[in-house]
Image (tube, rainbow, N blue to C red):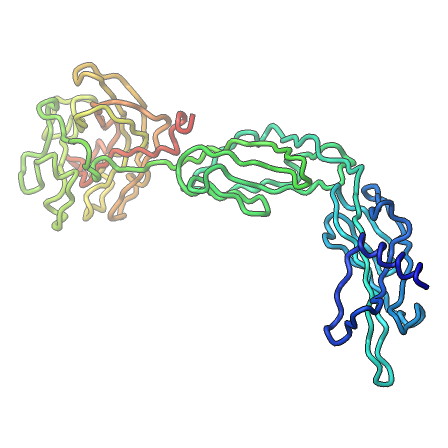
Length: 402
């Protein structure tokens, strides 16, 4: 009997045992335990994805027998390393070590106490196939997102491949190098925040520290109407270059600045341009009459806003079509675009006709001429314009984001 007690004490010096309630601990009395018999130096070894059945020997507490301990449970201190079922079958999950804990109890009956014995050993999992490479589809190695349009991009599972195929854990996580520019959600949805360049990483989760990176360029285009937002430059209509600039009747307005200040009284907030070949400009031809613009500095532009006199419902009093000319020096002008049609200008009876005209290209000029080339040549002496804006939309600039 003494030899048996000595053997049990040595076994539990290698195992983890839960202590009993203080009322159950009696000095000098054997508390029993569980010893894993198929462990070597108190360690079980199992290959990743393989299984191993736990074999053990139960040493009952003094005053009980092994048959009393009919409730046995197995647990893993870290199920990500290995799992164990109710039958004591261990399944290796990934490389690493964790502790197997075995607990056996003797249920209390007829007023008797419940006794528990425990044991443990180390389980070492080896042989896991780790991720070696994450390969991106070339189409997403560099992407662009416009915060003013579609400000999201979803990294779909089909956009990347985790190698090798037999890697045990192929799950990935996502991270952004700068969440102030763009952040990425756990499901791979990239959300743009502000303009700039950010790196989105797709990373392994199996401890291999493998990752793939994609570059996200977030475009935050500027949109401005230069003639309204006069904050960092001067704008004015270039004087003295037009042969027949305005209707001589000052009641209609003969100040070019009325085109950039609609005012509160519409009747006093438009210019009335003489039509070439009509009564007020009988000798003028196409090209003699135009709206001259000097933006005081070289600026990019790619759209024009034109509004005809608000109370004018007559097509005969509108510009139907115009050419756009540009110059670097204010003297030598050349065509930028020709035959630009003003939408709705030919519709009789329509009031408040205005149009935002998207140019075919982005131009960088200081001097501009808007030259009417088509109008009602059979009736009316003037073309009446109440508002003009020169605009730049960065998102429509083909060089934007390059």
